[in-house]
Length: 419
Image (cartoon, rainbow, N blue to C red; front, side, top):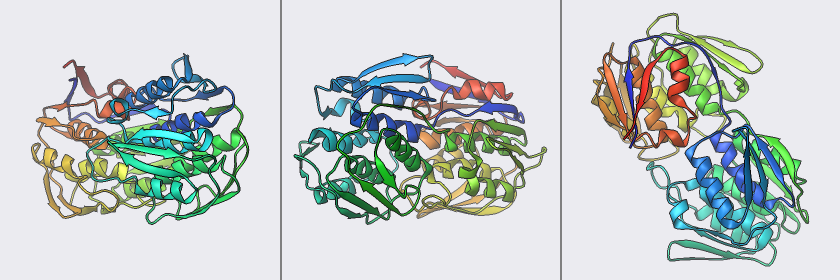
C-alpha cells in the first residue's frame, strides 16, 4: 500500500485550486440513473470513490465516457441490471445512494449493505423506512436490501435523525413517484442542495432543498442535462487548516466561502487573518502559533464532522487547552491515538477529546484509519519536526484529489512512496 512521507516545519504559502466535491459528485452520479437521456457532468473529481461509482454504474449497463479528465458523459438509457454487488459496495457507503433512483425509476433494486470508513454505525434504517412508506416492499436477505415497487407513491417522510444520504436517497426516489412527497427534518447540507439543483435541471419539481422541509412533486420522467459539480468545502477547509497549522498563508481558489462560515469562524478564533472573495478564501497566520479552539460538530450549518479531525491536529500544536466534541458519529477519534505517537497531548473522554497543545510534534510512522483521519495526520506531519510517514493512504485517495501535488505547490516537503 502507498504511503506519504512528509518532512514538516515549513510554512505553506501560495494558491490551491479546489476540486469538485466528492460528497456532491457521488449522489449526483447515482442520480443519473433517473435520466431519460444523456447527462454531461463537469468538475467531477478524480477520486477512488468516483472510480468505484463509475464501475458500479457501468456494471448496471450505464455507458460512461471520460472527456478532459474532469468531464463525464453518461448514458443511462440501456440499463440491464438493477444490482449493486457486495464486491463494489463494501468499500464505499455512498453506494447505498443507487437504491432510491433504481427503485423510483425501474421499480426494483438489489443493493448490498454498505461499507466504507470505520467511523461507527451508520444504519440504513431511515432509507428503508422511508421507501416502505412510499409503497415499496423491502426485505434484507443475505446482506442485500431487496426492494420492489410497481410505482412509488408520494408520502410524508419524517426522519428520526438528520441524515444526508437518507435525505438524498428519498429525494431521488420521490422525483418519479405518484403525487407529492414531503421530507421533514431533512439534511440541509450544500451537497443535498447540489443534488436537488441537478435533479431540477433534469426536470424534477423540488422545493425547499437547504431547509428542514423538502417538497417533491413527482413527475412522469426526467430528461438528460449538463451540470457542474460544486466545489469541495471539506477540501477547502483542509488546505486552510494546513496554512494555519504551519503558520503560513494559503489562498483556496474556485470555492464557495459562504458554505464555510463555521470553519472560518473557528480559524479566526485560532488567530488567522481571513480574507474572503467571491470564490476564494485566504488564511494568513503570519508565522504565529494558533490558539486552541473549542469545537462541537453539528449538522449544517453547524461545524462539519468532516473537519473535526483536521482541527484536532491544529489544536495539538496550538497554545492553550480546548475540547472537541463529536455529536454525529461515534468511534471517530482514532486519529487522536495516532497523533499521540507524535507527541500530541490528547485525551479521549467519551465523545470528547481534550487537547492540550504542545509547541512541536515529532515526526513518526502513523497509520490512517479513515478518510478525514488520514488528512489530519498529513496536517500533523506538516507541522511536526522531522519526518512523518502516513500509511494506508488509500483512505485519503478516496476524498482528496492529488493531495501531495497540491501540497508540493504550496511548498510542502512531501512524496508518495509506493507500497
